[in-house]
Image 1: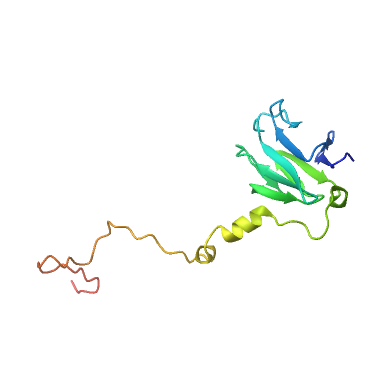
Image 2 (image 1 turned 90 degrees about the vertical axis):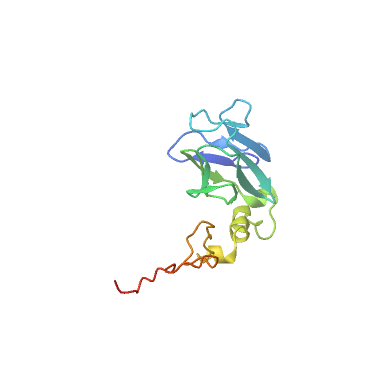
Length: 156
């Protein structure tokens, strides 16, 4: 294993050593980890270490970054988890203790955003319905004409 760990491709191939604490993954030659595939964005994802754990931050890539099959914006990469750049899947191979981790792992950014990003009512499916301003009133209080109220129970 290299200084900071490695990415093991699922399905075979050469492992990719993680040589720095911050790495840019993408299709461009200027990236730290170059993935020469058409469905990988030029600047696809940033990998960085926080308190001994690797994190992935998607850089608004077209085909997304997935961790354990779930599309993410920012996510902690635990040892042995799978990370997917477009359709290319790798396994994270590193030891947090070697990277200076002490105590519990740092909070997962996406989990906090999911919990705090929406109201309790909307998470429970009880959000208020939007009131449209162009809905038809049952009657117009400014109109004195008879028969304004359409009663669905009125006999024909």
